[in-house]
Length: 177
Ligand code: OFO
Image (cartoon, rainbow, N blue to C red; front, side, top):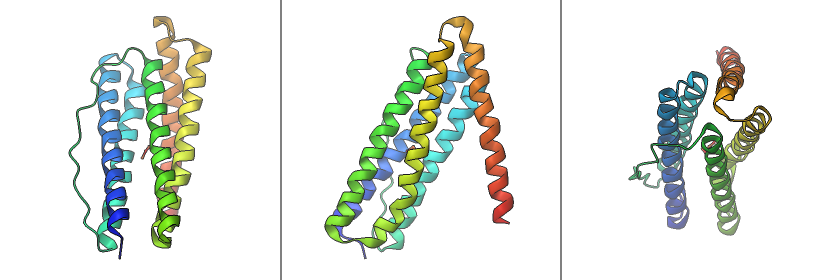
């Protein structure tokens, strides 16, 4: 059983994760337009991950006898000033998501909802990893510079992250079998 308060708060989180998925999808499309294939692949994967984050909450709410609400998602920006500004926006959005997760944890304590508290542990770790990853990319962009000559090298660095992530995913899948 879930309180109405917690149900509403988790439904808000569904909306935030859904928006992240659409925002990153829009960013993937912009990257493709710019010929930044590595960054596009990265953002497509991030978009899929955010959809998965949204669905985890969706299933959880219904599992505990609440009503998961399919959100209305506003259209994200379609254009981005530069690759640096794009990744900075991702980082800022992730910080917002982390703050929202922290508020949900506060609510768990306020309501003694230990089931939701247990459920949210996965998100706490995920947010820490996401923020660290985005900071790494932004640091690399700062080092390389983001003028037109640098875009190729930035994209190569992001592609290296794609390769590492794909290897980790394959190892996780093999471990799960
Ligand atoms: Fe689900 O917000 Fe990013 O990770």
